[in-house]
Length: 287
Ligand SMILES: NC(=O)c1ccc[n+]([C@@H]2O[C@H](COP(=O)([O-])OP(=O)(O)OC[C@H]3O[C@@H](n4cnc5c(N)ncnc54)[C@H](OP(=O)(O)O)[C@@H]3O)[C@@H](O)[C@H]2O)c1
Image (cartoon, rainbow, N blue to C red):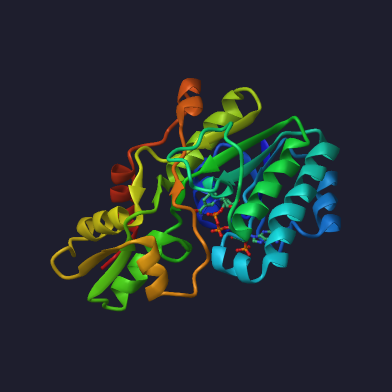
């Protein structure tokens, strides 16, 4: 297939480029294809494309909270623009969703649960889902807490820990009462490939890594894998304590745990236990 990828330089895009090596890829970052720019987006309608993997998004929760206009432009309008391109070409589009569209009051979320985002990132990603759902030929594949891309690309929790280690931190804090599914982007990309090749019914599929964890548990596991448990003091703190220590944060949901029952039934999942996935991913981080 000829596959157009947006946001290909990011954490997930780095894995997708490796995994989709049997397909003909049109790889774009925000320079080659700014999803906010409808003229630039629709200029791709003259190309022969069989599938759109729309990975591009403003993923920085902090930036989204303090500059929401930008986040809505990228995550909502940008997604609407990509849907428009899919409609013109009459091809399927894949959108990457997040558990951040829920309010976190339930322990675990299925595909049918009602969205109720509590921050601008979550709301802008939810509006992205709404835009995608106006077009029947869509897959919304929801990821858990992403781990991937390596130290130069990873913007999320694992690399934030690694950066503190590289700065010779003697103690590192981790929130112990916020839960999610650590999700390795390589496993996610393999599952994504199975989905677009084997074509289960269009619609929404949760695709979390197997097993849930608190941020603190991920911190503890990563530091242990790196063999640094005796050198660094790890301090569990509650969500409320963390906000007192580091006030300039964006509100976060308490549970971002996703149910993977629907995906498992398709037999297409390549998702592994997060401990195993993290131990593989950790090989990219040198001490
Ligand atoms: N990271 C997570 O924990 C997580 C969890 C759930 C869902 N997701 C979703 O997964 C998808 C992939 O995210 P990721 O983890 O790979 O994030 P990422 O590393 O931040 O990558 C996102 C990419 O989007 C691109 N981008 C930003 N604004 C753009 C624009 N206006 N036009 C075109 N490209 C633009 C950036 O490209 P340039 O570098 O070229 O500027 C960036 O490389 C996103 O839809 C995200 O919402 C992520």
